[in-house]
Length: 343
Image (cartoon, rainbow, N blue to C red; front, side, top):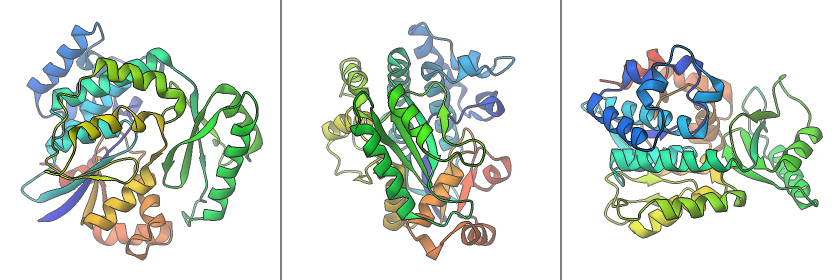
């Protein structure tokens, strides 16, 4: 039996190619009906309606109040689809809103409570829509870490943030990418300062707010008012959060887990690279399973493992060798890799 660490994706992973993902892959129609009822009670389009739309709409499907529910359900459905007769899940982590999914996959929240947290926070963020995000790489096409370049970019961020009227912060440390967040002035200052790369960076992310920064404190406060502590409990699987901390079964303070989830997780940098480093070194899984939807997180996972010097990998070529020989990563959003780990 193989051991696996499960990785839950965040916002930006349900796009045009994923339309119909729930209809195709979600394994529990009764549970999906429960998710739909939660949305219906809130006066929102159901997931079945969104996923079953004739065409994908950027304006409709990527809104926080719709995207969060779609992504949570797609990821949780994939978690249920893992072949547990052949794969032992030893830890769960996630990127950004994927932390909410991880809580449910790891058993600290029920499926419906986890969905309610993800849906509520996505809705609150959409309603507030404070600030925005942009993304910029600090490693080249060979994926060889250039930590001096990363430090230089972060110094630029600090300098921009220090200027009057500018707010700019590291939102997510995402493998070889920096996801930056701030107000319009701060984002524009950065985008005008750095060299354009690959014809697409710096890339402003549509319908994204200044996640994981102090700008989200009003949203965190609203989340704490709307979401109860009561559903949070002991995880059944170890959970690795956005600081690299492990929440162990039988040794987790449920109040502290709630406080982190609706506090620091919302208002402070989410260090996905650190989460992957800790997951790899602490649990040494045979395989990393990236839940769907989407296929965009694989590069960040591979780059995070390279940054962690996992198995001596020093760049893209080394990762590709390992992947071809032993399948280190299996992304369930890719049908050929899904078949390796799904029932």
